[in-house]
Image (cartoon, rainbow over all chains, first blue to last red; front, side):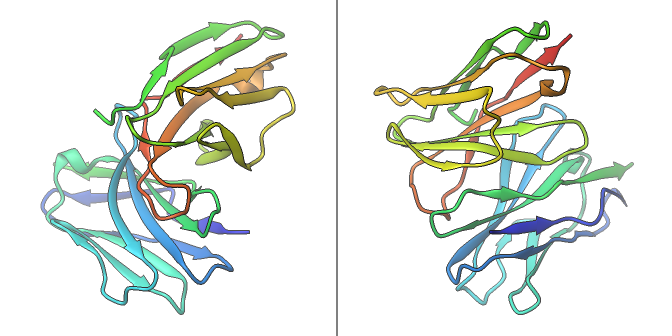
Amino acid sequence: AQTVTQSQPEMSVQEAETVTLSCTYDTSESDYYLFWYKQPPSRQMILVIRQEAYKQQNATENRFSVNFQKAAKSFSLKISDSQLGDAAMYFCALSGGYQKVTFGIGTKLQVIP
Amino acid sequence: DSGVTQTPKHLITATGQRVTLRCSPRSGDLSVYWYQQSLDQGLQFLIQYYNGEERAKGNILERFSAQQFPDLHSELNLSSLELGDSALYFCASSEILKGGGELFFGEGSRLTVL
């Protein structure tokens, strides 16, 4: 079985500041992938960033980066220079082997002008 | 636009009724996933199909069933509906079976059971 835990139901950040969303996971797979998905008010889920567990280097996509701590089974998302359009629900997700993609319960991010 | 099409976008029905939600995956994607998103809950995995075959099952109720057709579109059938079935139902597709591929989501079908 695989689990994903997001312990921050809501977060807020001032525009242009940096915020970090936390995620921990558990899996018995040695080969797995981690994701952060964004769900804006329009409700369509969009992939933000993806990390292969075998890669030690943290993934980066423009203002979005992750801190992947494999031993600690931690996968946090850092958003730099926050923008109003970043306001959304953010879901951490895990996929291993042929297993389904498991999602956390999400963190609602509010961006304050 | 993710390329995944879900219909209907909104559906209001009564308890005890049956509804069918439809999903057309992104062109070329063989994997289709169904998720349920209830208020204050994350995405609960229901079921996955790959090229017409059921590949994984989550906490899908016996009142719910799904299938993937030869043209790869999928349908999720919900029967004997209860108030608690009110939720947003997402379909997602992926080009591969094994984990690691990006999921492309539709806009969801919001089901309201009165």
